[in-house]
Image (cartoon, rainbow, N blue to C red; front, top):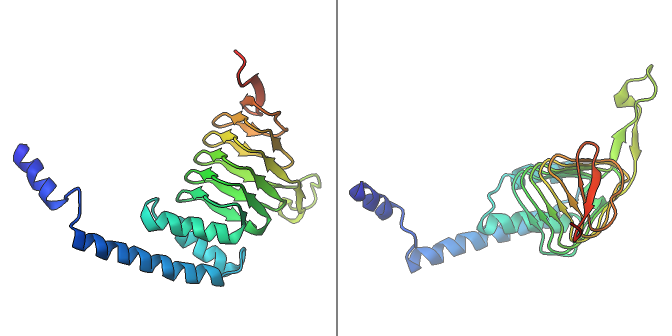
Length: 211
């Protein structure tokens, strides 16, 4: 076992040589230059933008791949900067989305902004979260649901909010500063600042700082 481990370490060393390190950094730099040029030519929300989003969303969460993806989204929407967006996240109508400073969005999120969506500074969004500011109308039984249009209401997520995995944020919701939304919650009504909300539909179970 020891011999096999030694052979493995020889094939996959922890550190590359300085020469390989320089070459590696050059390749990363060239990739970044290439993608920066492409990104600046795209119109956010256009067909070509969506095609490139699909490609960029599949890049890894390491090195230049992460920088390229964040640069793509910072160019596509109003963003204060230093966004961390992991693979598999998809945005629709990016020109109606505002991202604050130091926003972290985990894998597989889906954010669609038929109406404006504002996400404040230092917000943490868990994997698989859905944020949707438009909902299908369905009152008329004699018309296909898909032909009845949408009810569109803005969503506001204030600063220092944590949204747990697979939560759903519905149109018209405001999540107050410093709040926590539990995993799997469906938020249909606004949440006061510094609240903890869980469940379907989400209900406030306590205030942060209170026992």
